[in-house]
Amino acid sequence: MKLMPVPESAQDMEAKVAQLRQPRTYPDSPARVEVIETHMSWVFLTPQHVFKLKKPVRYEYLDFSTLAARKMYCEEELRLNPCLAPGVYIGVVPLARDSAGNTRVEGPGTVIDWLVKMHRLPAERMLDFLIERHALEIAEVHAVAESLAHFYKSSRPIVLSGDEYRELYANKIRVNRAGLTDPEYELPAGLIDAVHDTQEEFLARSHELFERRAVGGRIVEGHGDLRPEHVCLQSPPVIFDRLEFNRAFRIIDAAD
Image (cartoon, rainbow, N blue to C red):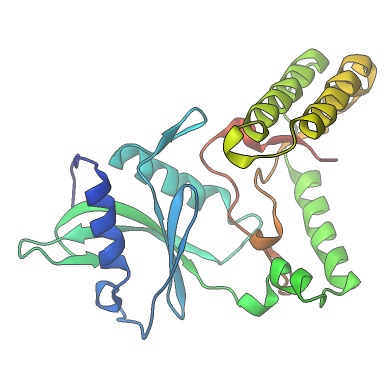
């Protein structure tokens, strides 16, 4: 298979998504394909598998704008996730177009994009599903906490000074404030300012605490996007979709 630069456009993306909605595009011709759109990806769910296609977008904190970049970040996702989601991630697979113009996942021809391929997890065991239905058991919460505690304990500490850690945290506060005050979201500016002012005040008066956390090896490379929809309450729990596109977002205090 050839990896070739492909001009990106909204029409190109629409065409890829349209093809990936069709069962015939997949090797096993599944009975149905469900589609979910996120801010940065399209996710295609067959009865057995999940295929994630990264959008050709560029923001201040990520760049998926080229075919090579999307392949690299697919591979990074594959590298990062087995520690918390063993056996879930299968590989990085091509979306290819053959000489007759047919587009297939894992097919022959010219690679026009790359997808992350995963085993599909049971929707009824997802943490967000159980929370919404008030069906979550406390023992299941403990199991997730134990998995995360083991992960953080076994993670190599990030070498940072207290000042470096405080600056990292201050930047996160700035980014959060800028995002939440975007007029598009119509959120109460006074509340947003009050929350972030309090965080900045705490940061300014807590030099010793942040120094202890940094020097004590409590800063690790964590998950980066730990949300209920990324937790499946199997035994043991599966925690997937570890953030791949910006390492700085994964650097976190284990207490967070």
